[in-house]
Image (cartoon, rainbow, N blue to C red; front, top):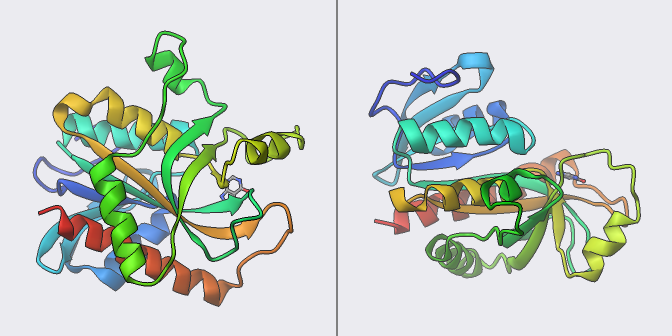
Length: 239
Ligand code: HPA
């Protein structure tokens, strides 16, 4: 047990899916996995282990934002030996080249959080995805006809950011979308890379910050299902 996860050693799979919302974790386990058992309920941060096409896989919520996610992910890799972590989230589009419902595969993530500078002696760390996970996910998404958008995203500390000009800056540097966790996840994977930790963030575009367009609930569910297929097949493919 750790301060935030009550699973016993061996109860969490080497590969895990990480939605922000713990109820999403329950939905994923109930909908996509077989032989499911609950492995965490501390603070209602629900976690489950089950199987997908014969491969053991876990799923657990992380909460919103880099600080919450970092607690769970650090404990998963340090104390439970988790190696492959795929964030499955939603994001807000910044670039006009991105539409609601698109699937984004994040090569890298910028951030206004200080966590990676804390890890990197105050210097700018390049927070990037694991190439094997990224390459597999992009290929699987393409095979499914999803035409994934592959590029940089931005992990914001503030959902309600006071500086509206920030969007222009992000857009001017080719940033595809905003969410709140990926840069921290990639920083943790780098910190523990000697343990073989690999990370990837994929996100469905739930809203377009420029146009104000947002996905209807039924569309949210179907695009979320497509993203889950990509993430789960990526994990199965790692064998
Ligand atoms: N900002 C940050 N995170 C998000 C957003 C957003 O606009 N939309 C979905 N996740």
